[in-house]
Image (cartoon, rainbow, N blue to C red):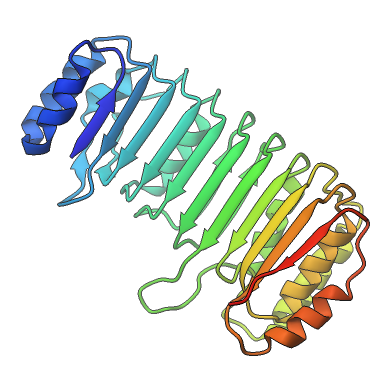
Length: 286
């Protein structure tokens, strides 16, 4: 365990000693911190069971930057969010669906959000009007964005559940691009358009969405990276849509999931028209 924080003269000593500390020791240190104007709090726990965050931490209304690793989040009923929080990074954290949604919603100044490999929440709803940077990686059914028009940098990495079955719905996943009018940098990984249905059905969903959103423009988009492509119609149509709707695009990088069919994928991709004459097309071998 290695938590670090600002606001204490004994910061270095406590950070070193906590490696051999018990849960009760950490509880006492956090309680002490909660009585100080803490601006930054980072708790790294990489081994053992998730550490349950004590309720006193949720009273720290001066926190600007919060990082939690391998923890259990159960805010007290009276918790109304962190009014000063601008950056939130939670990894391998267990939290319920409503806790995740409220935590994001009730941080009005939140600008940067990182959610990696969390547990207990498979439908991710993000309502954050000041959010600019978003990184999401894990097993989830869907990503729903609301009031996120200020996002400029988005990374989405979709994983598989224990049975190796992909959970995302391609039609719903596509809709969130309509909430990214200011996007400048977009990274998509691991079969972002894959569905448990056949490819023709997926292609129909994608084409329908593209037809309904022909006026959609990525006027600020400069960099796109898409990894784990399988070369199916749905993916190709989405790539073509981005190339036709990104007038100042500088770079698009794609990487297939395997060598199978990769040469045909490259041929199709290079034939796509693009509105940005300065766009650099980068193809990475699997």
